[in-house]
Length: 539
Image 1 (tube, rainbow, N blue to C red):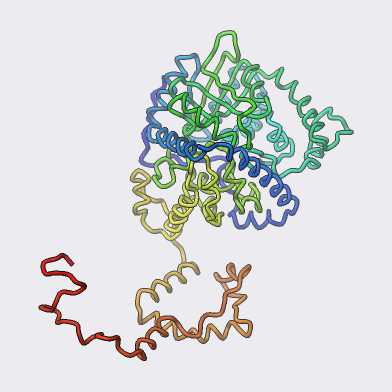
Image 2 (cartoon, rainbow, N blue to C red):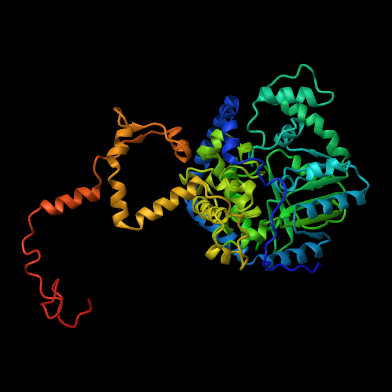
């Protein structure tokens, strides 16, 4: 068994790989909004999935109790993570498997490459895996002469199209069937030139393409939906049977699993096998659920490995406000109800993890002070639909607000404060503070005005001027500088001709004294008790 320190380090490891945006979200989203076909594809797909989910969820009278149970199990797992990972390694090793530990994406990629080299193979088949997408394993292996073939249909479409996934569950959700046919005709060798865009024909073409790979591959790579500490068991759920082929036929099986996927007990699967299929595909159960524990002589892969991946997860775990993001079971329910995701698609987020969960998970893995991910916490209307849909009750809106606060602190160079303490004593690195921005000036002016009633009253005298700017239609349609982003899609109604404070002051001045006001009050001391209080009673 390996000797690994599992405690939270003073400076948690930052995550790297395909979890960093290459451009700010507003810029990417603006470009994607111009793709009418993308919006049509997303609108149809997300509506279909969430309608199916609502139907199957409504069948369970104890759905909310299941959500509570799932949340409680994941909370326990995160609170006991070092202990559970040690237990998992002991059990997995005792059953003939080998455990490897990877601090980050680079280390995980090197480990996987080395294991493949040991077999003498130069190609592998892959089960759909978010963890391997996160670390950029396919690209890493390709650069070193090892071909990795995706066997999930949607992942295959993305790979052949030289594209990136845009959804956790349905990676090719942004493609319609005509686009898929064109990709197959262009990229698949020996495909029938008369291939149509009928879904059954497309599936048959993919099946013929992949069957040769399944039968010849000596090495398979998978992710894991769950790792059971109690028994050292790994689990994968999928809908097509390709996973079953990869997990049973090759001689060598390498699994890359994020450390947050560990569960304490096998019995915990009872909860998640109800939550996951209903929340993800709108099904009552997964068509294929594969569980394996180490090596079984004469049955399945005989050379079994698991790479336990950190890549920023201990960093997220150290944030007491954001650590519940690690509870995610990758069901994508939050994405299917998100109005922002539905209109912009997954590519706008620039990460393997798009949508609401990506808007919190990616910054937590890399640190929100990382410039490339600092805009992601703002990619939300904070409507709360994601929280209502999440099967393990991750309060995504609350974490978004927390990360926005951390982003402001980092940008303006303030001390970490309580948030810094949350990160196991690590101080916020912050960004070097430069010249004041328009927001700095605006907030500074607001702070100056609101800290004094006299100053606020002085500014209120300018209300008639602001009202005049609204013109005859009583609205301000265009503002310069920072305000331009607001008025780009909104009008500001004309301010009142008089402030409430001014109106109240005049009212109090003109109103007659109330009966008994000012004349029946007793002296400051020695007067009769007020409000019916008796002497000696606490006030």
